[in-house]
Amino acid sequence: MLAKYRLFGLAVPLALLGILAASCAVFWSLVAQWTTRRRWLAMSDWADVNRLALRKGDEASVPDALKSLGWEPAKALLSLSDSDTTIVQVEAAALPGKATQGQRTRWNLLIRNAGSSWPIVGLRPAVHINSILDYLPPGSVQAMAPGERFVLYASQTTAGRTLARSSARALLPPDVGMMLAGESLVLDFSTRPFDPLELQRMDALAKQLVAHLQASAARGRN
Image (cartoon, rainbow, N blue to C red; front, side, top):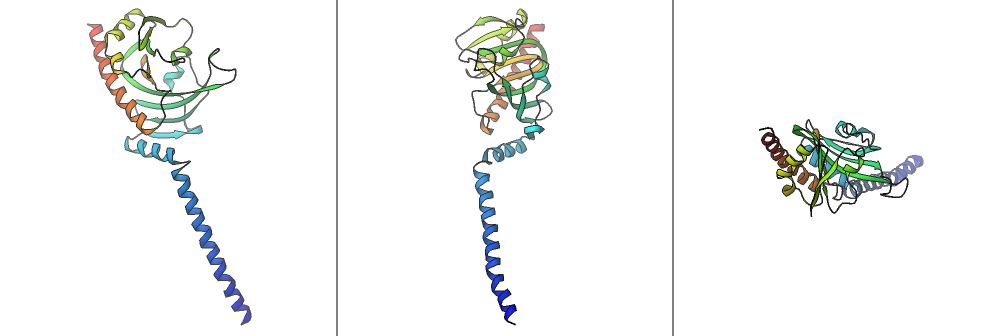
């Protein structure tokens, strides 16, 4: 009988310790969600609303549109994608002379089907020291029209003039770069945070640009 009372006496504090441990686990889980995992949860919610597949780490991959340009970043850190759009954060080796040897840089890029085919042409923000255009093979593009907000680069004069006549420069914020290559539109928003608010802005901007560029390409063919 005495042994039963002893076991009962031990069961109560053990049960209390178990409840305390479970409470602590729930508390730290909630803290992690609202601190270290808050960005990931917000990104996950935004991806669900916009029907995008969210991948990170080894599950994320470098878009084929970047590989086709001869530039293959070291790795993709985070990506969101659907049938015609990929938003990706990639890490790449710094260009010679742009940073200390061995240093890597991060790029925030949106790649969307442009709806028409273009030779390589782009708008580089005048305020940017680095640009994704710097990763193209030397001599593949040339500066055509330096301006206060953007410098126009193109591999073909005709395509450069078509882009210059379009509304792209008026639509682009001064800190966002743009490149067209084949059927891909690439927006470089690396100076901005990679968060749902900026992703929504870049997605809306890409839609506007594609519509205007399709109209400009059609006028150029006529």
